[in-house]
Image (cartoon, rainbow, N blue to C red; front, side):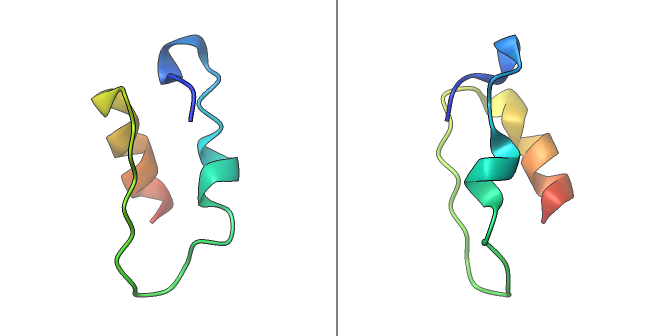
Length: 41
């Protein structure tokens, strides 16, 4: 996933199809993406 600083993180594409109660792991170079990812959970 590209960095969120330039608006090219494509978080929606990375999380599409990821659902359910199973554990999910998101690897990112920039920790600023995590609050945005948590909202999609």
